[in-house]
Image 1: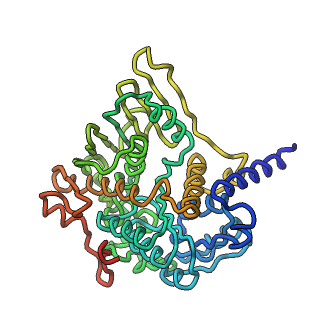
Image 2: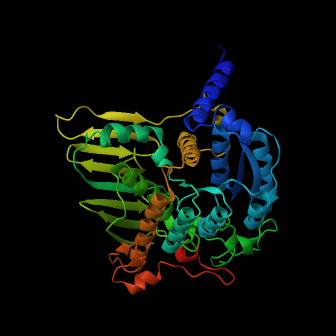
Image 3: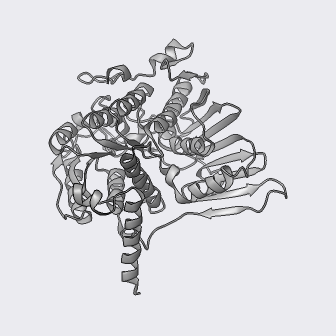
Length: 455
């Protein structure tokens, strides 16, 4: 079999297995319903990446793309036309509400900036769509409660983009090390990020480019002075996201929660701030530590956007400690290190790449090729959950817990490092009225904050 035919065979076999895994083979689904009617809101880097992964594993017709940047939107339309089977440029929309009303998608992927996640997700759910929502799911805790309430009330499947739960080498490590009891009793984990990813520029205010509807981009959040970095560098500002904790800790905290079957943290405490990189317009912390306390287990987070990583092999990672050893994991690898001489040998789990099955991965601009298999598995699992009426592996509840815990860490830091105990039943911080008020961020005039009881 020549190399080209082998690639097509592997890719076709993979697609058949994918379809078979959630009952989409043959006449009962594909021929009866046709392609999945999919829309993407937010056509930036990761929004397109998520959409392309879905196109790789399912029969998809993109019925709409939405973005407030007309230049980015038009480019996305051309790229999607080269990737989807029909070869068509999808209808393009500036306003996501118009997309939902006119395109009526069955499946909606949301890759917008974080400050828009809640309103977009809730409106998509209420329109009847199942949703794939990027993390963190919200910028405040009550937004997350409202998304959860909407998903349950309207019986839609919402998968969150915390794809460590579908990362092949981590799935294997969980099964062979955690689930088998190889670590013994687990009572501590460390999670970290030492990437130099904070935007440390200090550009002047400039006119908003004609291709960007900045009023609509800001939406419910404050309209900060436009400095050029804002549109694609919004993660540098707490007005639009949750800092490094909300961007990176949410992945690793969620991975530990999944590995160890943890629910809500009992208490969250955090300290930190801008200790080193003080000359930037960015207002997110460059140094932060957080302690997430669970029953008989602490998960400790540390990030620095300066200096050296503690472990060069694991600059963004988790390390789970048990009485019989330690499991380290990241998107790139995992390693089990036994304690003493009586618990077996060390085990290495390399990252799984799928270049032969999906050769287009190797030429896609800006792709995280190591994360592509995980996102494909997330998409397959989401479709399977819809087909079988089960909860997906990264269900909205799990995404909400991990997101809210990170938001509580930021709140604790802002409140001088005091411990916070969140009660999801009353949706309050126990015995802390000041912190409870911070569970809802103020919305700009013209926008109403979603309330769980009013969805």
